Length: 310
Image (tube, rainbow, N blue to C red; front, side, top):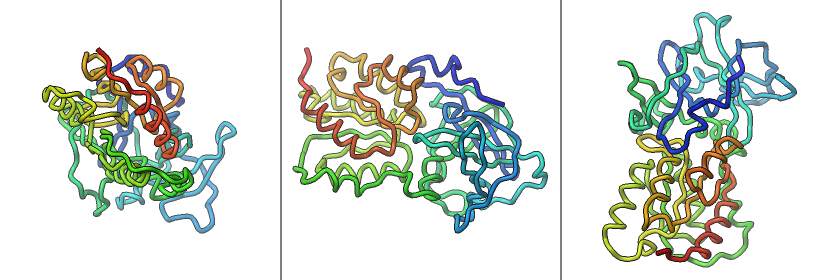
């Protein structure tokens, strides 16, 4: 079943809502943002890959694409399927790559507010720190929103943020200009923070989601001194519990004081649809993970161009 990408929720801007595809593994309910999903299909034979990690089943070809299959039950340390002939591949696209996640069933699609998604405990599912980015309370049951970027980065490190790319930018000067980061993935937050500090940006305010970032901005604005004393640039993910990056950007650009701040969307979801949505809410730049060196170059330019607005 191919997903209809032009859904109403994707065309709206700054509503702080999303659509989650619910699926199960060993009877437990998980979720993935529909914006990541290309299609769902019944499982099919795959070609094993030599010396691949145990969580990688292999590869198969679909519509001229070679797709890597990741067994989520294996990754999460959960029991294998008891009815494998009914299992499902969820075909995804993020970070400009395609993956198939092997799950046991697909339940349906739920439209919810990011406010319904809470921060998870740091240690869940066999001790894997940060395996989930949120827990959604929907219709009297809980849905665990998995950190798919972390899963892929662990299985294929070359597809994740490469901190060493900062070295290729040459000598960098130290900057005390404050950068506000909103990123819910603990792994990615740590890697982005390390990269920005390596690039010379040592004054970082790191928040776990858009709500925490917005609370900081409101408090900074209420201090009464120039906002650039507190923040000179905002770097935000799109998918985050409590408040997503689109809604955060809409609030910033709708505020007479905060609208002068450049906002960069740094997300695995940047595609044509999301780019249009980002433009509608006023994002100054949008960049797909894991292009960390390009992110640093964008911050350099936007901070240089920033001038207070009346």
